[in-house]
Length: 482
RNA sequence: GCCGCUAUCGUCUAAUGGUCAGGACGUAAGGUUUUCAUCCUUAAAAUCGGGGUUCGAUUCCCCGUAGCGGUACCA
Image (cartoon, rainbow, N blue to C red; front, side):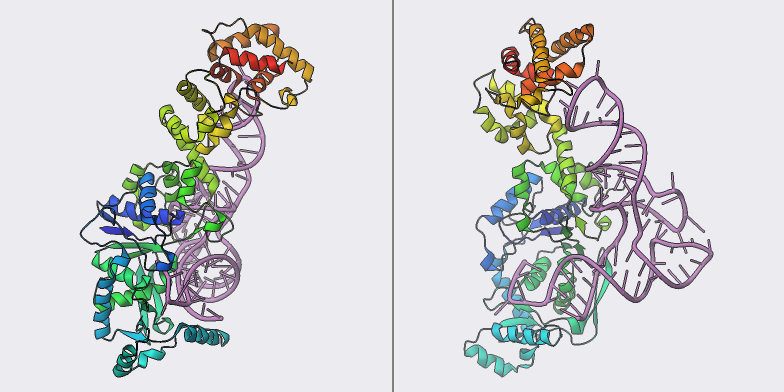
Protein backbone atom coordinates (compact mmCIF):
# COMPACT_ATOMS: atom_id res chain seq x y z
CA UNK A 1 0.00 0.00 0.00
CA UNK A 2 1.45 3.33 -1.09
CA UNK A 3 -0.51 6.57 -0.85
CA UNK A 4 0.54 10.10 -1.59
CA UNK A 5 -0.39 13.62 -0.67
CA UNK A 6 0.05 15.82 -3.71
CA UNK A 7 -0.62 19.47 -3.00
CA UNK A 8 0.33 22.46 -5.06
CA UNK A 9 2.60 24.74 -3.11
CA UNK A 10 0.22 27.63 -2.52
CA UNK A 11 1.76 28.69 0.74
CA UNK A 12 -0.71 27.33 3.23
CA UNK A 13 -2.50 24.09 4.03
CA UNK A 14 -6.22 24.14 3.27
CA UNK A 15 -8.39 22.47 5.87
CA UNK A 16 -9.87 20.30 3.12
CA UNK A 17 -6.41 19.22 2.06
CA UNK A 18 -5.68 18.35 5.65
CA UNK A 19 -8.60 15.96 5.66
CA UNK A 20 -7.48 14.40 2.37
CA UNK A 21 -3.94 14.06 3.73
CA UNK A 22 -5.35 12.51 6.88
CA UNK A 23 -7.34 9.93 4.93
CA UNK A 24 -4.32 9.11 2.81
CA UNK A 25 -2.06 8.87 5.80
CA UNK A 26 -4.46 6.67 7.75
CA UNK A 27 -5.10 4.45 4.75
CA UNK A 28 -1.37 3.87 4.43
CA UNK A 29 -0.61 3.54 8.11
CA UNK A 30 -3.54 1.32 8.97
CA UNK A 31 -2.02 -1.22 6.60
CA UNK A 32 1.64 -0.58 7.30
CA UNK A 33 2.05 1.19 3.99
CA UNK A 34 4.15 4.08 2.76
CA UNK A 35 3.06 7.70 2.67
CA UNK A 36 4.58 9.94 0.02
CA UNK A 37 4.69 13.71 -0.40
CA UNK A 38 4.73 14.97 -3.95
CA UNK A 39 4.68 18.64 -4.87
CA UNK A 40 2.53 19.58 -7.85
CA UNK A 41 4.10 22.81 -8.99
CA UNK A 42 3.50 22.60 -12.71
CA UNK A 43 1.75 25.95 -12.72
CA UNK A 44 4.76 28.14 -12.27
CA UNK A 45 2.73 31.34 -12.12
CA UNK A 46 1.54 30.19 -8.74
CA UNK A 47 4.90 29.46 -7.13
CA UNK A 48 5.15 30.52 -3.51
CA UNK A 49 8.59 30.42 -1.94
CA UNK A 50 8.95 28.45 1.27
CA UNK A 51 5.68 26.67 0.68
CA UNK A 52 7.09 23.16 0.88
CA UNK A 53 8.86 23.74 4.18
CA UNK A 54 5.75 25.31 5.59
CA UNK A 55 3.62 22.40 4.45
CA UNK A 56 5.87 19.79 5.95
CA UNK A 57 6.11 21.71 9.17
CA UNK A 58 2.41 22.26 9.69
CA UNK A 59 1.64 18.61 8.95
CA UNK A 60 4.30 17.55 11.37
CA UNK A 61 2.68 19.76 13.97
CA UNK A 62 -0.57 17.91 13.31
CA UNK A 63 1.25 14.61 13.62
CA UNK A 64 1.40 13.56 9.99
CA UNK A 65 4.83 12.70 8.64
CA UNK A 66 5.97 11.38 5.31
CA UNK A 67 8.06 8.35 4.50
CA UNK A 68 9.15 9.80 1.18
CA UNK A 69 9.20 13.28 -0.25
CA UNK A 70 11.36 16.18 -1.35
CA UNK A 71 12.51 16.71 2.25
CA UNK A 72 12.68 13.02 3.19
CA UNK A 73 14.18 11.42 0.13
CA UNK A 74 13.18 8.04 -1.24
CA UNK A 75 13.69 5.83 -4.26
CA UNK A 76 11.02 7.34 -6.45
CA UNK A 77 12.27 10.91 -6.72
CA UNK A 78 12.44 13.62 -7.65
CA UNK A 79 9.29 14.40 -5.71
CA UNK A 80 8.80 17.86 -7.14
CA UNK A 81 7.06 17.86 -10.49
CA UNK A 82 8.95 20.80 -11.94
CA UNK A 83 12.08 18.65 -11.58
CA UNK A 84 10.54 15.78 -13.51
CA UNK A 85 10.19 17.47 -16.88
CA UNK A 86 12.46 14.94 -18.58
CA UNK A 87 10.34 12.07 -17.35
CA UNK A 88 7.16 13.62 -18.69
CA UNK A 89 8.85 14.33 -22.01
CA UNK A 90 9.87 10.72 -22.37
CA UNK A 91 6.35 9.45 -21.82
CA UNK A 92 4.80 12.12 -24.00
CA UNK A 93 7.12 11.15 -26.83
CA UNK A 94 6.15 7.54 -26.40
CA UNK A 95 2.48 8.43 -26.82
CA UNK A 96 3.27 10.73 -29.74
CA UNK A 97 5.03 7.86 -31.46
CA UNK A 98 1.96 5.72 -31.10
CA UNK A 99 -0.43 8.45 -32.17
CA UNK A 100 -2.31 8.50 -28.89
CA UNK A 101 -1.73 12.22 -28.55
CA UNK A 102 -1.17 15.06 -31.01
CA UNK A 103 0.37 18.47 -31.45
CA UNK A 104 -2.01 21.40 -31.33
CA UNK A 105 -1.00 24.77 -32.66
CA UNK A 106 -4.23 26.62 -31.94
CA UNK A 107 -3.64 30.03 -30.43
CA UNK A 108 -5.33 30.77 -27.11
CA UNK A 109 -7.24 33.63 -28.72
CA UNK A 110 -8.65 31.32 -31.36
CA UNK A 111 -9.70 28.85 -28.70
CA UNK A 112 -11.37 31.52 -26.68
CA UNK A 113 -13.34 32.74 -29.65
CA UNK A 114 -14.31 29.22 -30.60
CA UNK A 115 -15.56 28.50 -27.10
CA UNK A 116 -17.56 31.70 -26.97
CA UNK A 117 -19.25 30.80 -30.22
CA UNK A 118 -20.08 27.30 -29.10
CA UNK A 119 -21.42 28.53 -25.82
CA UNK A 120 -23.62 31.02 -27.68
CA UNK A 121 -25.00 28.14 -29.71
CA UNK A 122 -25.61 26.24 -26.45
CA UNK A 123 -23.02 23.68 -27.38
CA UNK A 124 -20.48 22.36 -24.90
CA UNK A 125 -17.41 24.60 -25.28
CA UNK A 126 -15.03 21.76 -26.02
CA UNK A 127 -11.96 21.97 -28.19
CA UNK A 128 -13.04 21.48 -31.80
CA UNK A 129 -10.13 19.16 -32.64
CA UNK A 130 -8.86 21.29 -35.49
CA UNK A 131 -5.29 20.07 -35.12
CA UNK A 132 -6.21 16.44 -34.61
CA UNK A 133 -6.32 15.94 -38.36
CA UNK A 134 -3.04 17.67 -39.15
CA UNK A 135 -0.73 15.52 -41.25
CA UNK A 136 2.70 14.55 -40.10
CA UNK A 137 4.40 16.87 -42.57
CA UNK A 138 2.15 19.78 -41.61
CA UNK A 139 3.11 19.26 -38.01
CA UNK A 140 6.79 19.06 -38.80
CA UNK A 141 6.65 22.24 -40.84
CA UNK A 142 4.88 24.17 -38.15
CA UNK A 143 7.38 23.04 -35.58
CA UNK A 144 10.24 23.99 -37.89
CA UNK A 145 8.70 27.44 -38.26
CA UNK A 146 8.86 27.73 -34.51
CA UNK A 147 5.13 27.74 -33.88
CA UNK A 148 4.20 27.16 -30.28
CA UNK A 149 2.23 24.05 -29.56
CA UNK A 150 0.63 22.00 -26.84
CA UNK A 151 0.11 18.26 -26.78
CA UNK A 152 -3.42 16.98 -26.51
CA UNK A 153 -4.85 13.63 -25.58
CA UNK A 154 -6.82 11.90 -28.34
CA UNK A 155 -10.15 10.81 -26.94
CA UNK A 156 -12.15 8.02 -28.52
CA UNK A 157 -14.92 9.53 -30.63
CA UNK A 158 -17.60 7.03 -29.72
CA UNK A 159 -18.44 4.41 -27.16
CA UNK A 160 -18.30 4.68 -23.39
CA UNK A 161 -15.67 4.65 -20.71
CA UNK A 162 -16.52 3.09 -17.40
CA UNK A 163 -14.42 4.03 -14.42
CA UNK A 164 -14.51 2.64 -10.93
CA UNK A 165 -14.47 4.78 -7.84
CA UNK A 166 -13.87 2.80 -4.69
CA UNK A 167 -16.62 4.64 -2.85
CA UNK A 168 -19.20 5.19 -5.58
CA UNK A 169 -18.79 2.16 -7.78
CA UNK A 170 -18.82 2.36 -11.55
CA UNK A 171 -19.37 5.67 -13.31
CA UNK A 172 -20.09 5.67 -17.02
CA UNK A 173 -19.08 8.49 -19.38
CA UNK A 174 -19.89 8.85 -23.05
CA UNK A 175 -16.64 9.22 -24.94
CA UNK A 176 -18.08 11.91 -27.17
CA UNK A 177 -18.38 14.12 -24.08
CA UNK A 178 -14.66 13.91 -23.44
CA UNK A 179 -12.45 16.79 -24.49
CA UNK A 180 -9.05 16.34 -26.08
CA UNK A 181 -7.53 18.12 -23.15
CA UNK A 182 -4.00 19.45 -22.92
CA UNK A 183 -1.35 17.14 -21.54
CA UNK A 184 1.76 19.21 -22.17
CA UNK A 185 1.60 23.00 -22.10
CA UNK A 186 3.44 25.20 -24.56
CA UNK A 187 6.15 25.89 -21.99
CA UNK A 188 6.88 22.18 -21.90
CA UNK A 189 5.34 21.67 -18.48
CA UNK A 190 2.78 18.91 -18.08
CA UNK A 191 -0.73 19.67 -16.89
CA UNK A 192 -2.08 18.07 -13.74
CA UNK A 193 -3.87 15.53 -15.92
CA UNK A 194 -0.63 14.21 -17.35
CA UNK A 195 1.81 14.64 -14.50
CA UNK A 196 -0.55 13.00 -12.09
CA UNK A 197 -0.90 9.82 -14.10
CA UNK A 198 2.80 9.54 -14.87
CA UNK A 199 3.80 10.20 -11.28
CA UNK A 200 1.27 7.95 -9.62
CA UNK A 201 2.35 5.16 -11.90
CA UNK A 202 6.10 5.66 -11.69
CA UNK A 203 5.93 6.18 -7.94
CA UNK A 204 3.91 2.98 -7.68
CA UNK A 205 1.04 4.63 -5.85
CA UNK A 206 -1.61 2.01 -5.11
CA UNK A 207 -4.43 4.20 -3.79
CA UNK A 208 -5.28 7.68 -4.97
CA UNK A 209 -7.41 9.97 -2.84
CA UNK A 210 -8.46 13.24 -4.42
CA UNK A 211 -11.26 15.75 -4.25
CA UNK A 212 -14.46 14.96 -6.09
CA UNK A 213 -13.82 17.91 -8.39
CA UNK A 214 -11.66 15.43 -10.28
CA UNK A 215 -14.44 13.03 -11.16
CA UNK A 216 -15.07 14.84 -14.45
CA UNK A 217 -11.56 14.17 -15.67
CA UNK A 218 -11.46 10.69 -14.20
CA UNK A 219 -12.31 8.87 -17.48
CA UNK A 220 -9.64 10.80 -19.34
CA UNK A 221 -7.10 9.77 -16.73
CA UNK A 222 -8.12 6.15 -16.96
CA UNK A 223 -7.88 6.31 -20.74
CA UNK A 224 -4.33 7.57 -20.36
CA UNK A 225 -3.44 4.62 -18.15
CA UNK A 226 -4.86 2.36 -20.86
CA UNK A 227 -2.86 4.12 -23.56
CA UNK A 228 0.27 3.21 -21.67
CA UNK A 229 -1.00 -0.25 -20.88
CA UNK A 230 -0.73 0.46 -17.16
CA UNK A 231 -3.00 -0.78 -14.40
CA UNK A 232 -4.47 2.26 -12.70
CA UNK A 233 -4.36 2.58 -8.92
CA UNK A 234 -7.52 2.40 -6.83
CA UNK A 235 -9.30 5.75 -6.85
CA UNK A 236 -11.39 7.24 -4.07
CA UNK A 237 -12.91 10.65 -4.67
CA UNK A 238 -13.42 12.54 -1.45
CA UNK A 239 -16.37 14.92 -1.11
CA UNK A 240 -15.80 18.61 -0.62
CA UNK A 241 -16.07 20.45 2.66
CA UNK A 242 -18.69 23.20 2.56
CA UNK A 243 -19.11 26.36 4.59
CA UNK A 244 -22.19 27.11 6.70
CA UNK A 245 -23.99 28.51 3.68
CA UNK A 246 -23.32 25.35 1.70
CA UNK A 247 -20.70 27.01 -0.48
CA UNK A 248 -17.08 26.18 -1.02
CA UNK A 249 -14.74 26.80 1.88
CA UNK A 250 -12.57 29.59 0.57
CA UNK A 251 -9.56 31.53 1.67
CA UNK A 252 -11.45 34.78 1.53
CA UNK A 253 -13.86 33.87 4.31
CA UNK A 254 -10.79 33.18 6.40
CA UNK A 255 -10.22 30.08 8.43
CA UNK A 256 -9.32 27.63 5.71
CA UNK A 257 -5.64 27.59 6.48
CA UNK A 258 -4.59 25.12 9.13
CA UNK A 259 -1.93 27.66 10.09
CA UNK A 260 -4.68 30.09 11.08
CA UNK A 261 -6.25 27.52 13.37
CA UNK A 262 -2.91 26.86 14.97
CA UNK A 263 -2.45 30.57 15.51
CA UNK A 264 -5.82 30.89 17.19
CA UNK A 265 -4.97 28.19 19.65
CA UNK A 266 -6.54 25.07 18.28
CA UNK A 267 -4.88 21.84 19.29
CA UNK A 268 -3.78 19.24 16.73
CA UNK A 269 -5.85 16.65 18.60
CA UNK A 270 -8.99 18.71 18.11
CA UNK A 271 -8.35 19.50 14.47
CA UNK A 272 -7.65 15.87 13.78
CA UNK A 273 -10.66 14.56 15.66
CA UNK A 274 -12.92 17.09 13.99
CA UNK A 275 -11.57 16.49 10.50
CA UNK A 276 -11.77 12.72 10.61
CA UNK A 277 -15.46 12.94 11.49
CA UNK A 278 -16.15 14.93 8.33
CA UNK A 279 -17.00 11.98 6.17
CA UNK A 280 -15.99 9.09 8.33
CA UNK A 281 -17.31 7.58 11.54
CA UNK A 282 -16.14 4.77 13.78
CA UNK A 283 -18.39 1.77 14.18
CA UNK A 284 -19.20 2.57 17.78
CA UNK A 285 -20.82 5.74 19.09
CA UNK A 286 -17.88 7.31 20.90
CA UNK A 287 -16.61 10.20 18.79
CA UNK A 288 -13.61 11.13 20.89
CA UNK A 289 -10.73 9.61 18.98
CA UNK A 290 -7.00 9.77 19.49
CA UNK A 291 -4.67 9.52 16.53
CA UNK A 292 -3.95 5.94 17.59
CA UNK A 293 -7.67 5.13 17.66
CA UNK A 294 -7.98 6.47 14.15
CA UNK A 295 -5.10 4.42 12.86
CA UNK A 296 -6.61 1.31 14.38
CA UNK A 297 -10.18 1.89 13.24
CA UNK A 298 -9.96 3.70 9.94
CA UNK A 299 -11.19 1.88 6.83
CA UNK A 300 -11.23 3.50 3.43
CA UNK A 301 -14.50 1.86 2.49
CA UNK A 302 -16.28 3.62 5.35
CA UNK A 303 -15.68 7.10 3.97
CA UNK A 304 -18.96 8.85 3.26
CA UNK A 305 -19.51 10.40 -0.12
CA UNK A 306 -21.91 13.24 0.58
CA UNK A 307 -20.39 16.67 1.12
CA UNK A 308 -19.97 17.81 4.71
CA UNK A 309 -20.54 21.25 6.20
CA UNK A 310 -17.77 22.63 8.36
CA UNK A 311 -19.26 23.29 11.79
CA UNK A 312 -16.84 25.40 13.78
CA UNK A 313 -18.90 24.98 16.96
CA UNK A 314 -18.17 21.32 17.01
CA UNK A 315 -14.50 22.06 16.42
CA UNK A 316 -14.60 24.38 19.43
CA UNK A 317 -16.17 21.64 21.49
CA UNK A 318 -13.37 19.25 20.64
CA UNK A 319 -10.78 21.93 21.33
CA UNK A 320 -12.25 22.66 24.75
CA UNK A 321 -12.38 18.98 25.47
CA UNK A 322 -8.74 18.39 24.59
CA UNK A 323 -7.65 21.50 26.49
CA UNK A 324 -9.29 20.04 29.57
CA UNK A 325 -7.42 16.79 29.05
CA UNK A 326 -4.03 18.49 29.11
CA UNK A 327 -1.82 18.31 32.16
CA UNK A 328 -1.29 21.68 33.78
CA UNK A 329 2.36 21.77 32.77
CA UNK A 330 1.54 21.14 29.14
CA UNK A 331 -1.22 23.70 29.16
CA UNK A 332 0.94 26.40 30.70
CA UNK A 333 3.50 25.76 28.01
CA UNK A 334 0.86 25.97 25.29
CA UNK A 335 -0.65 29.13 26.73
CA UNK A 336 2.65 30.88 27.16
CA UNK A 337 2.64 32.77 23.83
CA UNK A 338 -0.79 34.19 24.59
CA UNK A 339 0.13 35.14 28.15
CA UNK A 340 3.29 37.09 27.54
CA UNK A 341 1.50 40.42 27.21
CA UNK A 342 -0.34 40.04 30.50
CA UNK A 343 2.83 39.34 32.35
CA UNK A 344 4.24 42.71 31.39
CA UNK A 345 1.41 44.40 33.27
CA UNK A 346 2.28 43.29 36.72
CA UNK A 347 4.94 43.54 39.36
CA UNK A 348 6.36 40.31 40.73
CA UNK A 349 3.40 39.36 42.81
CA UNK A 350 4.87 35.96 43.51
CA UNK A 351 7.29 33.90 41.63
CA UNK A 352 5.89 34.39 38.18
CA UNK A 353 6.01 30.84 36.93
CA UNK A 354 4.05 29.64 39.90
CA UNK A 355 1.55 32.43 39.52
CA UNK A 356 1.10 31.55 35.86
CA UNK A 357 0.43 27.94 36.69
CA UNK A 358 -2.26 28.85 39.16
CA UNK A 359 -3.91 31.29 36.79
CA UNK A 360 -4.00 28.79 33.95
CA UNK A 361 -5.32 26.09 36.27
CA UNK A 362 -8.30 28.26 37.12
CA UNK A 363 -9.19 28.90 33.48
CA UNK A 364 -8.54 25.46 32.06
CA UNK A 365 -12.12 24.33 32.15
CA UNK A 366 -13.52 27.42 30.46
CA UNK A 367 -10.95 27.71 27.71
CA UNK A 368 -12.11 26.92 24.19
CA UNK A 369 -9.10 28.29 22.34
CA UNK A 370 -5.65 28.90 23.74
CA UNK A 371 -5.73 32.44 22.41
CA UNK A 372 -8.55 33.29 24.81
CA UNK A 373 -6.33 32.85 27.83
CA UNK A 374 -4.96 36.38 27.57
CA UNK A 375 -8.29 38.14 27.76
CA UNK A 376 -9.69 35.67 30.27
CA UNK A 377 -6.90 36.15 32.77
CA UNK A 378 -6.11 39.83 32.33
CA UNK A 379 -7.72 40.73 35.63
CA UNK A 380 -5.22 38.66 37.55
CA UNK A 381 -2.39 40.81 36.29
CA UNK A 382 -3.90 44.27 36.50
CA UNK A 383 -2.61 46.44 39.30
CA UNK A 384 -5.51 48.85 39.09
CA UNK A 385 -8.64 46.99 38.15
CA UNK A 386 -11.29 49.04 36.39
CA UNK A 387 -14.96 48.06 36.23
CA UNK A 388 -18.45 49.50 36.54
CA UNK A 389 -19.51 49.69 40.20
CA UNK A 390 -22.99 48.49 39.32
CA UNK A 391 -21.47 45.16 38.46
CA UNK A 392 -20.91 44.60 42.17
CA UNK A 393 -24.64 44.62 42.78
CA UNK A 394 -26.31 41.28 43.26
CA UNK A 395 -29.99 41.01 42.41
CA UNK A 396 -32.08 43.44 44.54
CA UNK A 397 -29.23 44.95 46.55
CA UNK A 398 -28.11 48.57 46.28
CA UNK A 399 -24.56 49.79 45.87
CA UNK A 400 -24.53 50.80 49.52
CA UNK A 401 -25.72 47.36 50.64
CA UNK A 402 -22.94 45.81 48.67
CA UNK A 403 -20.31 48.02 50.22
CA UNK A 404 -21.58 47.17 53.68
CA UNK A 405 -21.43 43.49 52.88
CA UNK A 406 -17.92 43.77 51.56
CA UNK A 407 -16.82 45.59 54.71
CA UNK A 408 -18.16 42.73 56.79
CA UNK A 409 -16.25 40.25 54.68
CA UNK A 410 -13.16 42.37 54.95
CA UNK A 411 -13.22 42.28 58.72
CA UNK A 412 -13.29 38.52 58.58
CA UNK A 413 -10.71 38.09 55.87
CA UNK A 414 -8.24 40.34 57.65
CA UNK A 415 -8.10 37.82 60.45
CA UNK A 416 -7.04 34.99 58.22
CA UNK A 417 -3.29 34.62 58.26
CA UNK A 418 -1.10 34.54 55.17
CA UNK A 419 -0.38 30.93 55.90
CA UNK A 420 -4.07 30.03 55.98
CA UNK A 421 -4.86 31.98 52.82
CA UNK A 422 -6.04 28.89 50.97
CA UNK A 423 -9.28 28.50 49.11
CA UNK A 424 -10.54 25.72 51.40
CA UNK A 425 -9.95 27.74 54.54
CA UNK A 426 -11.30 30.91 52.98
CA UNK A 427 -14.43 29.10 51.93
CA UNK A 428 -14.93 27.38 55.25
CA UNK A 429 -14.47 30.59 57.20
CA UNK A 430 -16.74 32.69 55.08
CA UNK A 431 -19.45 30.09 54.66
CA UNK A 432 -19.48 29.54 58.40
CA UNK A 433 -19.88 33.24 58.97
CA UNK A 434 -22.72 33.48 56.47
CA UNK A 435 -24.53 30.45 57.84
CA UNK A 436 -24.22 31.48 61.46
CA UNK A 437 -25.47 34.97 60.69
CA UNK A 438 -28.22 33.62 58.43
CA UNK A 439 -27.02 35.69 55.48
CA UNK A 440 -27.65 34.99 51.83
CA UNK A 441 -24.71 33.52 50.00
CA UNK A 442 -25.20 35.47 46.80
CA UNK A 443 -25.40 38.80 48.59
CA UNK A 444 -21.82 38.38 49.67
CA UNK A 445 -20.07 36.08 47.30
CA UNK A 446 -21.11 37.81 44.08
CA UNK A 447 -19.78 41.21 45.23
CA UNK A 448 -16.64 39.62 46.58
CA UNK A 449 -15.99 37.87 43.29
CA UNK A 450 -16.59 41.00 41.25
CA UNK A 451 -14.38 43.03 43.59
CA UNK A 452 -11.60 40.56 42.95
CA UNK A 453 -12.08 40.06 39.23
CA UNK A 454 -14.04 42.99 37.82
CA UNK A 455 -15.72 40.40 35.61
CA UNK A 456 -19.27 39.33 35.03
CA UNK A 457 -18.07 35.77 34.65
CA UNK A 458 -14.99 34.27 36.21
CA UNK A 459 -13.74 31.50 38.47
CA UNK A 460 -15.06 31.53 42.03
CA UNK A 461 -14.06 34.08 44.67
CA UNK A 462 -12.15 31.72 46.94
CA UNK A 463 -9.88 30.28 44.31
CA UNK A 464 -9.24 33.70 42.81
CA UNK A 465 -8.44 35.10 46.26
CA UNK A 466 -5.96 32.34 46.90
CA UNK A 467 -4.15 32.95 43.63
CA UNK A 468 -4.14 36.71 44.12
CA UNK A 469 -2.79 36.38 47.66
CA UNK A 470 -3.94 38.06 50.82
CA UNK A 471 -2.48 41.48 50.24
CA UNK A 472 -3.78 41.95 46.72
CA UNK A 473 -7.18 40.46 47.56
CA UNK A 474 -7.75 42.76 50.50
CA UNK A 475 -6.59 45.70 48.44
CA UNK A 476 -9.15 44.94 45.75
CA UNK A 477 -12.02 44.42 48.15
CA UNK A 478 -11.16 47.55 50.07
CA UNK A 479 -11.15 49.53 46.89
CA UNK A 480 -14.64 48.26 46.09
CA UNK A 481 -15.95 49.67 49.38
CA UNK A 482 -14.88 53.22 48.60
C1' G B 1 -26.69 24.90 -21.63
C1' C B 2 -24.16 20.08 -21.38
C1' C B 3 -21.85 16.22 -18.30
C1' G B 4 -21.17 14.17 -13.47
C1' C B 5 -21.68 13.52 -8.10
C1' U B 6 -24.80 13.87 -3.81
C1' A B 7 -29.52 13.82 -0.69
C1' U B 8 -31.42 10.86 7.44
C1' C B 9 -32.60 16.04 13.21
C1' G B 10 -30.02 23.22 12.25
C1' U B 11 -24.82 20.62 11.68
C1' C B 12 -21.55 15.95 11.67
C1' U B 13 -23.43 11.18 11.34
C1' A B 14 -25.42 5.65 12.87
C1' A B 15 -28.74 1.82 11.33
C1' U B 16 -31.96 -1.68 8.85
C1' G B 17 -36.30 -4.72 3.63
C1' G B 18 -39.89 -4.91 9.79
C1' U B 19 -36.12 -0.36 15.31
C1' C B 20 -39.89 3.96 19.91
C1' A B 21 -34.87 5.81 13.13
C1' G B 22 -29.51 5.71 17.58
C1' G B 23 -25.21 9.01 18.95
C1' A B 24 -22.31 13.75 18.93
C1' C B 25 -22.26 19.29 18.44
C1' G B 26 -25.66 23.13 18.99
C1' U B 27 -30.52 24.67 21.30
C1' A B 28 -34.06 24.57 25.66
C1' A B 29 -35.22 23.16 30.78
C1' G B 30 -33.42 21.31 35.44
C1' G B 31 -29.52 19.70 38.98
C1' U B 32 -24.33 20.08 40.89
C1' U B 33 -25.40 24.65 48.63
C1' U B 34 -22.72 32.51 44.51
C1' U B 35 -21.51 34.15 38.37
C1' C B 36 -19.31 31.83 34.14
C1' A B 37 -17.46 27.27 32.76
C1' U B 38 -17.12 22.01 33.72
C1' C B 39 -20.03 17.72 34.89
C1' C B 40 -24.91 15.16 35.16
C1' U B 41 -30.26 14.54 33.84
C1' U B 42 -34.25 15.57 30.64
C1' A B 43 -36.62 17.61 26.20
C1' A B 44 -37.55 19.36 21.27
C1' A B 45 -35.46 18.09 16.55
C1' A B 46 -34.61 14.12 10.62
C1' U B 47 -35.25 9.74 6.44
C1' C B 48 -36.26 16.00 -0.22
C1' G B 49 -40.99 15.01 -3.54
C1' G B 50 -43.63 11.51 -6.78
C1' G B 51 -44.03 6.80 -8.72
C1' G B 52 -42.84 1.66 -8.69
C1' U B 53 -40.85 -3.55 -6.62
C1' U B 54 -42.56 -5.84 -1.91
C1' C B 55 -46.95 -8.45 2.97
C1' G B 56 -43.78 -4.36 4.41
C1' A B 57 -39.12 0.69 2.03
C1' U B 58 -35.79 5.55 5.07
C1' U B 59 -33.13 1.28 2.85
C1' C B 60 -33.72 -1.49 -3.83
C1' C B 61 -35.30 0.74 -8.93
C1' C B 62 -37.17 4.93 -11.97
C1' C B 63 -38.52 10.08 -12.58
C1' G B 64 -38.42 14.83 -10.62
C1' U B 65 -36.34 18.68 -7.42
C1' A B 66 -32.40 20.86 -4.94
C1' G B 67 -27.27 21.44 -3.70
C1' C B 68 -22.44 20.91 -5.30
C1' G B 69 -18.60 19.92 -8.92
C1' G B 70 -16.60 20.01 -13.98
C1' U B 71 -16.97 22.31 -18.58
C1' A B 72 -8.83 26.22 -18.89
C1' C B 73 -1.95 25.85 -21.94
C1' C B 74 -5.22 26.16 -12.78
C1' A B 75 -4.63 22.52 -9.70
